Length: 400
Image (tube, rainbow, N blue to C red; front, top):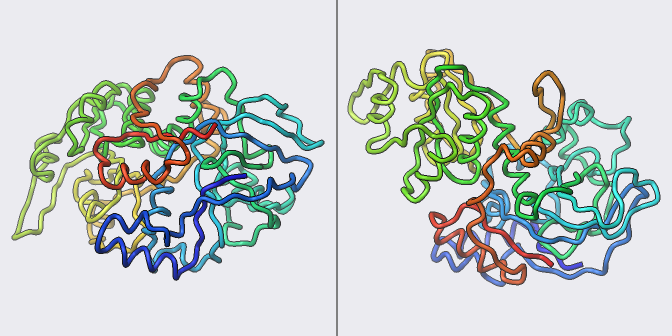
């Protein structure tokens, strides 16, 4: 098994942080904790596990976080026992090539994607009666045993490799979809999960910050689920404006952001020195960037009793003014990954909703994959994403 992984040693991370401070070439150093390794093919550790041969996999923002060693020393993740190894690649499509004797839902030759990837009870080897409350409900991304040790010690691999092994519950069939559609299911599910956390109401003024992979699909799903809302987009790359409008955006904001927000919503803008505040802004904001001072700004761009859905993130500690939260009665909702949704009166996995909509041709999928690289050229792919992110939406690695 050949696979790309992150070795979570503080010394290696520190070296890359120092090197990259002087040059972006530091990220691609042979000293990087992200390495391409070969292991003997591991045996299936349990009877309900399968082996998957990868076809292709997308590069996610979380993969970029590992590659750039962007984790900060003061985040909530730090107290968690650090895994020695994190296998990269979860936006993946592959073919089942081996099944355990207790596997019920797959056979050799089935085409599958990886549905679960966060460190949940099932992936750590817990028995169903040992699952935490979140995993029992199907909300694997909110697992309360995230920090507990895994009961499996052998290498398992993931999407950025020639193959991986997984319990069957980690996978979902993607038969009927093209390979490109299948590799997009996971990022599409992230966007859908965010919108389902707070669906706009008819007539709502909605702001989507960022027209990258996730932001573009937040636009698409928000417009599908609530056609009567008005969607504004804040994106400084004009190359993505047309695509945003194709997916359902009504207007692209330009110029000074505070003035643009006030104009778009008919709000009042107040200023004293560099300190600015808006009254009467957006009903809903989906922050799909989450960098720098954006959190501080988005709180000031919301209408009283408005809702911020926090989708984008940075893995470093930040500072913000909490005044608008209690003064304006704001709601802040965190949205991570995917899980079980309340959708049309039923509880259903986010992945199943996206797959069904793709099969019914209800979603635009063309235009998202902008670049392809061979797996062995993964450093070239990451280099593109670091040095020319404006030119990309989704970069895919070909694994077969």
